[in-house]
Length: 92
Image 1 (tube, rainbow, N blue to C red):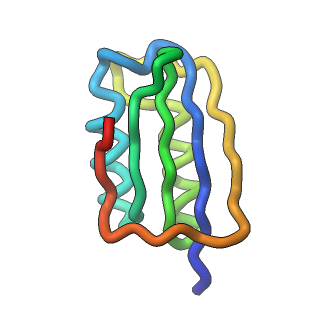
Image 2: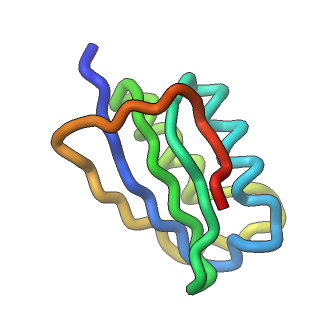
């Protein structure tokens, strides 16, 4: 199966609620590689690579987030050429 890469931008109350840690745990559970980081504007950015179905499942999870989060929106940007990651990491 061909891997897919997607950048996800999550907006709402998503910083200070352990969103990154929960998102990284979910991505690892799904067997994905990539990164998650806080952005200065208060949003969270994820870059996830793996089987498209698993990446789509992570995007569904991102729309809910952990219990303390209040997700307002999730923007997805799919990339033509997948980016390779050895693991899923919190980078900032």
